[in-house]
Length: 252
Ligand code: ADP
Ligand code: MG
Ligand code: MG
View 1 (tube, rainbow, N blue to C red):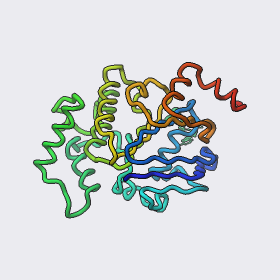
View 2: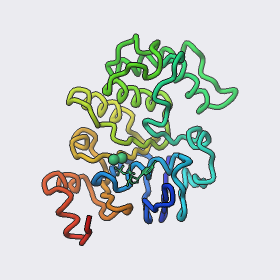
View 3: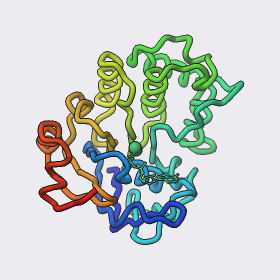
């Protein structure tokens, strides 16, 4: 079963410490949400786990399926099944969405195990239909002229096609209207199961009404300051983040 474990992770950006000891464990079949005010380090955690060179891990450890994640190169992390929505380039001129996905999928499957072209296209059509995407999308250049909602849908399409073991979805709800949000949420819910662990990062509780998390964590000032069940998200929605700041004695 998929398993991501993070222990006392400290991360600096350009010499400033952003994450100050994050602990987290996500297993197959689970959906965890990380919530928190803007600028508290949620995206920094995602970038550091994906191995973005700007995010320097200064302390702590992380494992993917029991293997040392931080020792892996970026492409190795993706190959071993770690997925970050938005990790792929925003625009690739001259490369169609379908071709890009096929390259990414074959990189994940490994040499000698490439997916047959016809099977790939059948699978792509199926997943696009499920996400209510226009078939012409497959042949359009990656992200070129995609609207905000189309980009988000495309990120879920990438996830559906690549079948990661652990998926990190950072602000996949931002800029979506309610209909697009429901489609994106359904796309994620369809993929839920023992072979996938999901980490959802969001500022707002709204998304979590449609993707109901098993665990909710609140990040403030580079640490997870509280964890609970789905009711924690509802409590935050009702009372705001200031309530928790006060209770914890956190100053801005
Ligand atoms: P969140 O996702 O919770 O809104 P971020 O992780 O994006 O927070 O940012 C946390 C802090 O780290 C902010 O103060 C932000 O300015 C800083 N930071 C994050 N990424 C970078 C970067 N690439 N360069 C400079 N500062 C950064
Ligand atoms: Mg932010
Ligand atoms: Mg962010």
